[in-house]
Image (cartoon, rainbow, N blue to C red; front, side, top):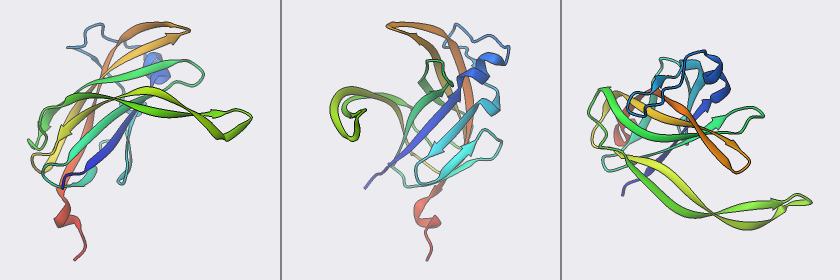
Length: 176
């Protein structure tokens, strides 16, 4: 039975904008995000800060890596939309990414009593990459940085980050 492995790429948009390099207007040729402006959080595996270390995931063939993104932006209002996940180099252990959108219910807490909430319909967007093999690889993640002001959205540009991963066979990783 296949499993989903949830991964969250968090971009520090303020650091990316302060870096001084222009964001690329071209999604096919994004600018590089400085490595300390991105971190990768994996459900059971922990946190990979933007270092040269690799995130090790115990997977089975047929599992899926489910990629989401968030923007860390202090008091500013930005979004980071993950639009691509493609192997840069290393093992050919992942199939092509596919974009998925599904409607979910989001609980909106009552400010007077946060354990009371109303259900608000919302769409969940993510990329999925199927596990087709094992080994070390670097996955290039492409992001669109968007600024939100009231009801207006403005695309500021595109960046990429190279995510270092190791996919290990789950049965080999399990204690005997």
